[in-house]
Length: 409
Image (cartoon, rainbow, N blue to C red; front, side, top):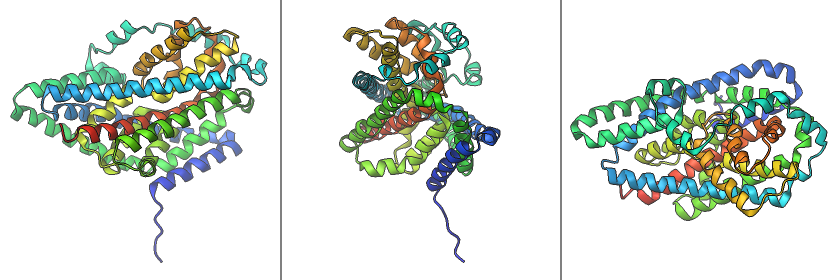
């Protein structure tokens, strides 16, 4: 009898679907299997940091000269910032159009969810500013940065190290780059092994997440959730779809078909960092993008490109203003876009941190920080969704940059 082989992406989707049903039907038991999903995330995160370090150093050094690095870096950063501005504009536009803050169902339930402890914790974490962000991007001790998984500092060190390799004798630098290239190959193979357990990990993660939700808070904030999900869908499929159609050699349908494994892992883990090993593997094996591009663009994107997070922050700021009956003028909404871009760059690629970065945006336009406590109850499901947008953006930009620069670098 011939053995039936089910492709991995179908296995993952089945795990996702069954996990959601299981979490809804058996909430008590589902919370007990959530640690299995946590182990899956930890295995991916275990590989993410060394993969960023090795591939970004190799990718930077392989550009061979500072001029090529400068061109690639400037173009990549520019595209990331432009797409983030688009994301914020879509989010703010939809929030103004739908006005989710004015159609909250059972407002009393929502206000009760903003507990004193949450509000106090938020007020104690309001130290976001541009100068601090720039200063903190430079590590004092790279081993401490690696231990704390400070992605921005790791990226800075990797870029700095890669630039230094370009400037020394080629024969000497090849010894290091060849060694790190082998390390990255081993890490990619480890990703292959971890991904064999993806259906089980995804099942456990989603079952545990669904069991944690309160139906009443989901229902009360229904229009806020709809606004965010609509914005994420528009940005993911319309903005990125148009970029793929007009700026790459890929067909839109083929592109989204090839990256669905990464999107599913992003949804289940809520972490761009945890998904990065899978994203890099798909970029090379499915999209056939050159490593010298992906090893530079994707780790950088996982650190500074958070379009989904930025879009949610735009919607959240307008929602909170509407909830408290505060009118925001055009300049204040433009300030939200500006601060949203900065916050997007400074957002760590791990679950839940985007909601903390919202603090600086609210402060910049004088909105009450208590508003964060209101939306915190539904942030997990939206965190899962916006991570899909984040990693899709990384892969889209990698495709755009690859077409434009592979023959020039």
